[in-house]
Length: 369
Image (tube, rainbow, N blue to C red; front, top):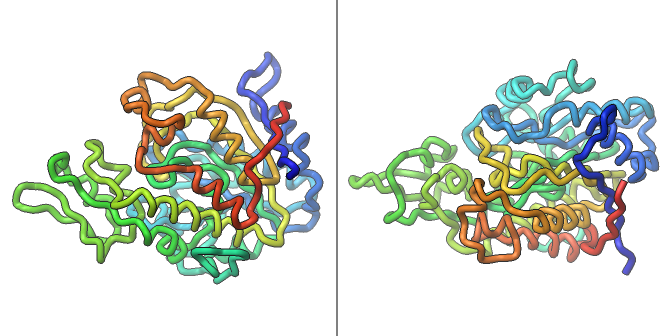
């Protein structure tokens, strides 16, 4: 079987050369110009970052991609869908405000932001999933499906449910409407280990579904009938008191994300960019960002989101851990930095299922630019 090609460049810059120049050179070498952008609507799928988080991708990166598309006659827009959990991105007005707070304005990026699933997260379209095993259809934000071309610009980092977040998570989970996110999350139901719970109530504050309550001893419990399985409580607990019922449900979540990615990309030109810097252990959905777990590595690009995620995962695992991070505090149980941070997860299930359904291939040839 032929290998997919993944292009990459490191984070080193000579005097007179910036990372933004290197990004432009990388995407050009990787073949982005084989896509016909002329008069096409181009959805650039991105994560605007939760206000308070300092690890999200800065708008400067997006400006490079936007200018590249516009120079070739395209009509780009930056886009994301609303979230399930309590925060500043769970409906479009707050979501736009969050994007502006983090610097994503038309003046900084050169294009407009569109929240793809509308004001309340209900503006979606049911899309077939070619070869889907868990989902035969997917609920995708309408504006993303209205685009002619899909580009993804990803911050490669850790995630408490998916193990890591890269191209598959950015496109699959990120393009799902609120209903779509519920469908992807509904296999997993977290529970509380009472002996570890400190009664701080952080989990309750971040639960959008009223599923968490406290007993007379200030120990939390989760009503699984109300729980959407979004995993937000896992991320905000500082005491590791909340865990998933089974690791297998995370694998199903990852498989569904791959299937949603297939639904979004099927039949349309697409291209993917991942930036491995400030590799925080948790998603940029958090209103905070813990110290990076590995040093900055580089910028990667490919037409194959599966090969891209595999190349990025391999690059992170080949990097030394930062001992002053949460990774340095964890027991080394796996040859996988993200699994050592989140032992109940295995991000490889994103990749293996992506291969299974024909989203891409895991074997890749790495070309340095």
